[in-house]
Length: 628
Image (cartoon, rainbow, N blue to C red; front, side, top):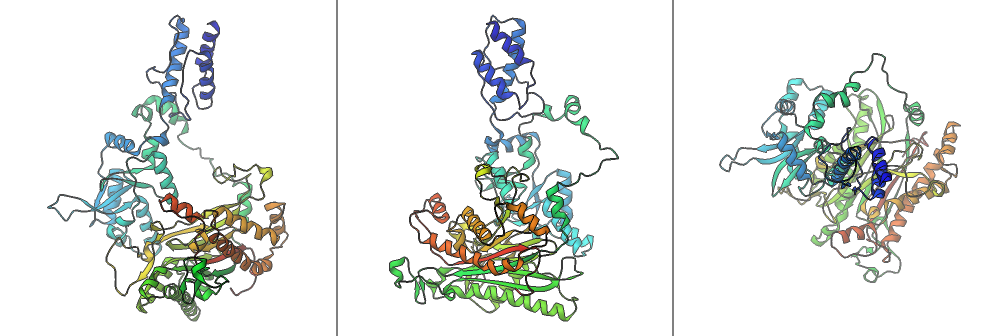
């Protein structure tokens, strides 16, 4: 008994923080006097002091032992509370509305000025844009979502274009909001962890919560972070002295720290332009012929699989245009690339699925050629950089004007060699991935390889970026299309270039960029794509057993191997297409398509035979030649 009391006394003297919780729990369990449930985290910078309820102590203990037991009780009660990530989002919403009720709405006829005032005065980060014209029903029909980030984007774009401030502030919010059919929403029975993951993946800061067709409120990251704090934990003199007072104010001598060594090495070459060597490959559906597409090898007929690229419903382009850079002051060569996947079901209506995708990509190339010629002819007075979304929009307009019936997914990108940026717009299930050698010594926790021991790793080549795909449902991507007349249905799978997923990626020397149609991604796992790219690097000696340190030394000595890269990069595109075909014909191993099909209650095994187009790019420090 004395031993157990002594143990409790020692434990009571310890600080109740994250680092000692596990040791306390272990010691108390060994004493057989206290049962404490384990927890993965504490919820306050100060110890929780809720009423004791978790400990059962011997009634014959001394006064000192009782005090120690009470403190242990408080710890037990605190760590009984569920993980924040497991809490249902409806509880967060209820707590938010209980603490402070604000209706996060703004009328559809309001201006940007009104929206800014509402954000500040109501202290909200997002607002549902509502239509109140139907007063008879006394309903506020939601037509879109507007966030504080949207307002900053509007201001930045307008200032950059030289728009007068009054004109900016008087713009209608209905033209700047996210349309209701594109708003990402959460459900009340989803957890904080699920909602946080969704917001992180899509890069959104406000999540409307939908209940029976009604928006019950908007949840932000701040709401989820503050959920487990009582008002007494956030305010008051004690909390200010404990948590805030020593952290207020920076001295006059405060300065920014120097970047880490690996960052400084990159910044040293930041102003040096980067270049891209490009290789393309295109495989048709393996069972395709001039007479149609076979459902399987037996229906196909010929002994040899299809290899003629002209049979493919995919299309692509790679083009260089000389235009003004983003600053509008210097002429710069821009490398554009794009892929499109024609929708095969048009064949059932007597329409060749190849027509739309080919015209769409061909017009992209024509527009760039015309813009470049005009820019050179006028000395840069009447041209500017064409964004991927704008290029898609102009190409789509020409395709419609030519009355080309059909539809396709589309992904178009442009590489800015001076600022090392890859800008792209994507509609549907084509996409872009960026592969990069990331040294584990400097990698973030999320990028670090924690599954394979360092001594067993063949490489630190990782996925640095994967573009977001857009699907209406499984195997039903959004697409650009034309039926001969405009479609008024807002729920149609046809989308405009303005609806595309548009983003930018910072590119480093040595990166490998893969742009491809779904024929690759449906059949080859992302990790297998990485393995193929690594094999290509090793075969061509861009990387050896010395890894990125050897490569860095080679670069510093002036050896870029640019010409070898230019000659070899088409082989990488070919290897990926070949891998996709092999997997598509393998019925013994489930492809990414088959795995996703089963998750959606669709029985599918093996691969997914399809057209496959790959645009492979290798980022180098010197140009191999002036032509693409």
